[in-house]
Structures are given as C-alpha cells and as structure tokens.
Length: 482
Image (cartoon, rainbow, N blue to C red):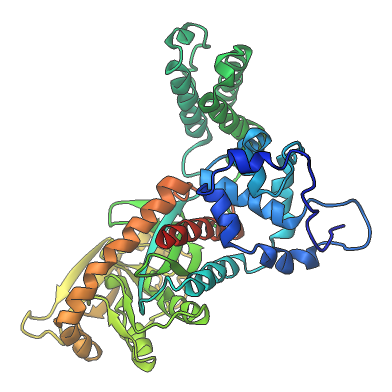
C-alpha cells in the first residue's frame, strides 16, 4: 500500500539538518531544484492504495538509486552510508533517527516498479524542462555521439573477475597495513573456478576478522563488491553470458562485448536525448531518433554536430526536410546506395562494413581509376568460412562460392551539396564544439561507473543509463546556475 504523499518530517531532531548540511551541499541543492513528485505520478499505478503493508515511498526509493549513481557505490554501501550521513538522510526526507531500508529492497524496486516505464525519456525530459525553465539552454545546436558500456557478465572469465576484485581488496588493505600480507591465504595456481571462490572466501574471512582494518570505508567497499560477486553473480557468470549484450567494434582491431548509448547534447552540455542499444548497432542510424526526441523535449534544433558516422544519405535527407544543418564530415566510403542497405552497415571506427550477423569485412579492394570518382568503388571481402554457417546466409551467400564481397560507391551525387557545405566557415567553426560530448562520455564512465553495466539485459542497461544521465544533467544544471 502506498499513500498519496510522503509522511511529514516530524522529529525533535530535525534541526540537526540545518546545522550539519550546508546550504551549498549538492544534495540539498538537488532537493531544492527538483520537484520529485513526477516520480510518484509515474509510479503510483504500480502500487495498491487501499490495502496491504505500507510500502517505502517511491520517491525515497528513487532517491536511493540516484544517490547510488552520484556516488558510484554498491546497494549495500549506499544504504549503510545512509545510516550515518546526515546529508543522505536529509536528501531522502528521513528523520535523523529513522531506520534505513534493507539493501535488497532496491533490487525489488528496480525489477518490480521501474519495469515497463520509459524511464530514460522521462528523466531526460525532466532535466531538459528544468534547464529551459532556468534559461540555461540558449543554443540551438545538438552534438551527437555514442559511447560503449561493457557487459557485466562474460567480458572476462569468472576467474578473472574474482581475481581482479580480490586484488583490489588486498591493495586497499596494504595501504593501511602491509604486514597483513603474511596473514592472507596463499593464492591459487589452478584455473578452477571453485578454487578461486574458496580463496576469495578465505581472504574475506581474514579481512573481516581484523575489526580495525575491516572498518575502514575503502576496505569495506571492496569487501562488499567481492561479496556481491561471490553471493549473487558467480552462478550467472558460470552458466551464461548477458543475453542481450553484443560485440561492437571500436576500431578494426579492437572490440567490446556490451551496449551502446547514443547521446544528443546541447552546447551547454545538457544531454537532451538518448537511445541505449546493443553493442553492434550503427551510430548514424540513431540520429533521427535523437533529433526527434530532443525536439519533443522542447529543444529548438537548427544544427546537428557529429562525426563521420552521421553523414549517411538518409540523415542528409532527414535534416534537409527539417531545415537543419548537418555538421558531419563526409567519409569517402560512407554512402552505399540502395542495394541491401539494411544488411550491411559501415563502421566508421573500424573503416569496414559489418553484415547483419555482426561479422566485419576482413579486407577491402579498390576498383576503378582515381580520376573517375563517381564510378570508383570499394569491394569489401568477408570471411567465407563464417558465411558458410551463418544463419542469414539465404539470399546473401551462395553455397559453394569461394568469396563473399560487398561493393560500394566511394562518393555519390547526393553528397555533393554536403561536400560543399563542409568547406564553409560555419561548418569549420561548429565542428570545434564536438569535443564537448567526448568529455561528457568520459564523465559518465569515470565518475559514475558507466563503463561497465551494473546488471545483465538491455532493460537494465536502459535503466542504468536513465539514472546516470539524470544525475549528470542535474549536476551540470547546478554548475551553470552558479
């Protein structure tokens, strides 16, 4: 059962907050900036209003998740810190003496309450609404890019993950007392997962028995992360990969297993739209969705700035219809004509085409003379051994063929106008703004843990993206207000 409003804060100790939570504290400022009632309005249909046990209010549960993203902590650590950190309790609308929730409640809230709602669009739209209301967004240009997130499961073997977390725990202990090295169990030399699990359990036992070292915050954080892997994830790591994660290519020689977040951002560095996809998806295909979502959120879009991935023919036609300038430099290989346009996509980082099965071409050959630009073509050759067993080979690969290739025109007539535009002063000046979204991607990954997925599945990744982008947008709004 859930009530229409959070209970009023009636406590003889409430005055503590005025003494210990400064006016410029970021959590106090977020509370003053955002009316979180929109969370209740969105989630109230997920609760019963007239019977059952009283549930923790959805706004408070949402704020727990927001704290988790802002401070990049585990569920256990964020709840534990909420027991003694008065700024946390103030942010959560709790009385100073009030008990915190059980950490397992956060998992249930994510799975039962946040499922089946468009959380990503909801939270981004809310921050854009606040930014427009505060007259922060004054530009009319969008910067677009994609950043990758590695899957939590099977980016490394279970042994490697446990070894890495055990190493981080030992390192945090050595920084306090290097003599503890003598107390630790001997590392296993086998490649058996069960041996690594036993080693980690013995390591945890030694650390937790030392009541002094075990109470250091940086040690406790590493202990909790290692426990999570042992208690909750070892079975998943052993049995299955992330069911939705896919292999994406950063360059021709490097790849990742996970997801992509396609972002649109204003020149003031406020993210205005996002699309979270599996790792193999093409960056340029998301431009139209990003622009439309930004417009729906209230952004006036006159210019879109991006790298070569966004200069495909359909994107040029799209922006022309909307009277938008596209500041995206043409790649000499980016256009592919109409033949099989849904089956082969160009990966601008690797400089190769990828078929719909996710296989990348292994080499390319040029046909035609350099003086015949409009007729010159590149032929991309694929690994025929993969084609023989591919589930999509019908209509694509002929049994018995010794090669499989895909040819494209180097430059088409449709790009002539865009080619002239990219020589203009306006194009060159606006291109200089693209670095801003690279810095935003770095902030998402290194300050808010967006480099690795917190759980498995595309839905969970979209949820993580929603909370992370909401947090960084709020922080940016507060900075610009200052």
